[in-house]
Length: 398
Figure 1 (cartoon, rainbow, N blue to C red):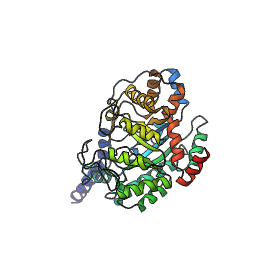
Figure 2: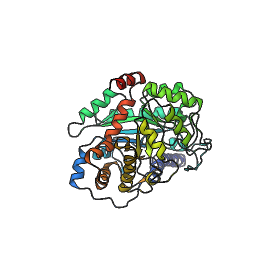
Figure 3: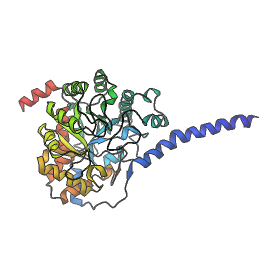
Figure 4: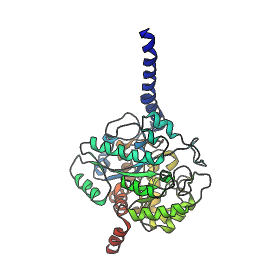
């Protein structure tokens, strides 16, 4: 009798263990992959040069997965040990708050969302299951927990002082890695501009207006209507600039990009993607958009996956970087991996010297590579985190 009573409970407990532990890991392993193709040989000179940089990556989605950031993992593309090995000074961590069914690059409706199943499987708090806003607040909390567990090796950056302190600490060997919070699509505002201030208070300092679908703020390149900024969207862009949040046009429709660039008072970024001239995928930027972003003083960050550069090799990444440099100058191009964003790449973040070697092979000078690998992004972030009134004072002085 006792055995018949306990056996169903044991079965249920085992099924729950599989659901909460095995399923999320299985899902991530199938979505964030390394393609296994050969890497290029990195010379001692390239490796030494790489180690002298403050590398910045403007986009990864690692916070959406059920992993502790401070622990080395055998899945996905990055964690703190791999960031240290790759000599990353600052990683921008994006909050993904909604993903539609049948995700594609052409046209997605905003009517569906597959994330609740993943969040439930990962054991996230109930309030995050059906609220994009709460999901982003949870990602901020998750980063704070990782920072507290890192023994000072992971630092959350929210202002210019924190960034300067991070870079000063990295002057000595074995310095820390910085973490800056971003947002992938402002559907997490849930139509309320007041939520932008709450996200700012939680530490978010960059935001992409759209993701793979149109939202209350703007049209997506992958949405159904692909329109421009909504009236709310115009308020949001202005408020972001006033607060000190960097405006990111990755995933924006052509009309959205044009309207943002027309009204922007501060540097604008495209945090992850590619360029049409090298890889003709709809989300990649055309020459006019590249020129427009450069005129704001912003950067175009090149991704590492196939739809960004039409390959996964470091040489393809370098060719896209070279195109931007040749079109508008070296000051306006940066890195935006899209690591852990359901992407397949050639190398994880521990092998970022692959890009340094590829740029050397393309004929880039060391000072140009330093700008691409982090210098340009640091300039924009330093400016972008200042509230607009303070930024105007600095701009007039300098």
